[in-house]
Amino acid sequence: MDKQTYIDLEIFETKENNTSIFKMLDCTITQGGSDALKNRFLHPFTRVEEIKQTQEIVEYLTQHTNEWSLTITEQDVKYAEHYISSSIVVFHVKKNIGGWITAEQFQWQQPDYFHFIKSSIESFHHLLQKLHSFLNPLLDKNVPQYILNLFSEVNNLLSVFQKENAEINKISRVSTLMMDYKLRHDKKENINNLLNAFYEADALFAMSKSCRKYKLSMPEISPKSKSFYIEDLRHLFIEDAVENDLIVLNKNFIFLTGPNMAGKTTFIKAAAIAVFLAHIGMGIPAKNATIPLFHEVFSSINIADNVQRGESFFLAEILRLKELGKMFQSGKKAFAVLDELFRGTNLKDAMDCTVLITELLTKKNESFFILTSHISELYERLKENKNISFLYFESKNINDQIVFSYRCKEGITDERLGLMILKNSGLPDLLSE
Image 1 (cartoon, helix red, strand yellow):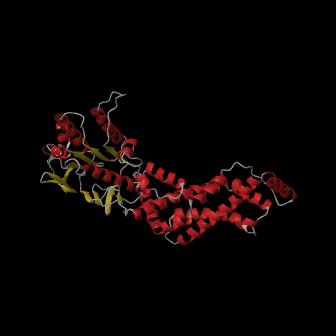
Image 2 (cartoon, one colour):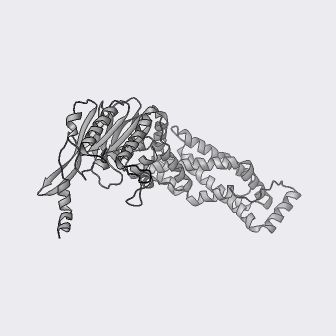
Image 3 (cartoon, rainbow, N blue to C red):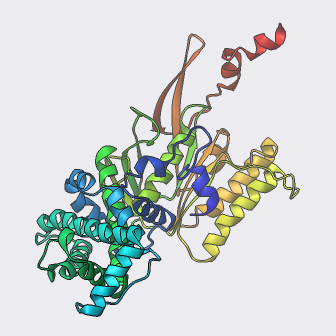
């Protein structure tokens, strides 16, 4: 996805409040885990094998998410990070008179540093033990390779401590410096690998926890499917949301109509977010889904003119669509949501431009598009196109009051409620006083 699509779908930020899709789903317990999760959001998969592998790991971990949060704390990991990145001199000593003298001098001359090393070693050993105790019960025959690799790295580092006969908090000064050398010199790369693996595990556990918390279901990703099926789709931002199906068979274009505030834009955002989450191997806010494999998710929703570059709103719309065209030129398959195209020009031009672009897009058989529009007159010019499915959001006028059901149905609507919404807002009365 490009930057504009991330903004349109409010993946990382929103203008309305301090939430976002990422913030909702970021259930990590460490900053490193949060960074790893963000990296997954920034790099969706484009291969079915990668998506399915992640789905399997997330589903496997779902039953253990609560124990993960209770076992490890962010402070545990911060101590390890601080220790391994410390600039304190690493002493290579042996258990002889020279080593004893070096250890004595170091503790006497730098007591704070020595205390830091000793307490860090104890803390790191405690972290490894906690990881071992947590991971060991997970090692059944169906365990993902990722967990096996993490467990192997934990055991590798624990072996450093097992050579000490005494308890870690009771080892001598010389043994402390020897242990420090093994960890910060001999095993430094292993510890960094362990921390990176831990961050990835934290991200995956967060994905699992989010799936449980928000009742997300794993979609089936079909690389060759020409059908699009999402049952009971909803938007994550809306509590008690009205759920709608998005089912299109052997077509690649949805023409979506409905009055203002009926739910069109929220619906296309929800669809694009679901496709995006599916491509990072995560559950989606729906009951069931079969989604084709795409290379890109694209949106044209919150377009703005650019005074500094001399770009009108209409030109900005065209330039945005050119970005979509470049995706096709590079051979990519896209899922694109387009909200009210060509609002920056007159009605006739808007109709002509929309028909031209729609006819061209429907020929991109491996991509999928949803276009919202208030111009119901376009139906007569597009109804013969076999690649287009027509949907609308219904509304009712009851005693001059607008009632929205937020239900998406097959067909088209020419209901116009703009004037009524304006009158009900009280603006005309305010201006007439």
